[in-house]
Image (tube, rainbow, N blue to C red):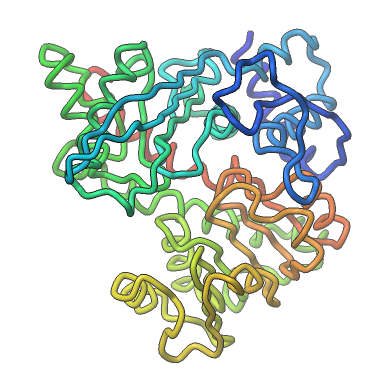
Length: 420
């Protein structure tokens, strides 16, 4: 029964996201080192709730449109299992550092649970709980038979050598298995921010060598693996491609275009992409190849703008060479970290937030001029910001549909394993 109620909830989430909700939900404290009895309602800067609370507010808004037993809704909303671990790392210079890491399994109505592993110094317990919740709803929206999960290691991967990252990844794999948070039929990680096929191959190798030598399903312990290690063609670009395709479907709908006074089709539309990692780059590339003008790209440390459209491949090459977008040849405007967020507020038809959660909030939503917000990241728009955007006539295309391409292709990758 829970399986079908989750699907009903997923169907209700999309239209309900546009409706206001005044629900207040408790969440984890600023420091996850505090015991649970100290949990209380705390708002962050600019009066925005924390990410986990934003997810719960959207859930409650959607749930208010269903005739479902309230107790069952609480079961669906709650995160089933959470793991917080610490382990030592000996750095290349001999120093010893304590690494903090997390994993959350939101729902076991389908198994295995599924969700990425991110390496970011901003990772904490409430974030992985929120992301695991969104994974459950996302899988339900696209009818993929996984429960939701998410994990993270609280490091900035740019500050560690490849050997150090390998040691961290392998130890994290061991810790997940030790506590029952890893296995082909239990919990299957995938790449996320700061990780990729390399980290997935390390996790697969560690699991196979230590626990899966006689298990035919061992190769299915992670997805997002490199092609020569059991991966699948198309997984790298899948999430960005999904953002483009879902936006394209919306713009080819006569009903939606008439309702919102949009001209149909992607060609000729102006696009700004926030975040130029895997999702942002591929989304920008597919929009550009379809005839849209990607006029702006915003990164954490820089931004660039050109009214006639940027060459996405050349911009990516420039960023890899220099580490920044600032000073890109041919750009009309570029800037460093301080001014970069303001480029999201430039005039455009489509804004693709493809970086971190809460990138669009009550402080910058009044200045956003885009007609369509195509959410490539997880939870990039806060509930308050969404209300502001909708009141201005903008359309917010929800993350749980827009960025589901990755988990869809991960499911196909899993089906390559003989046991599945």
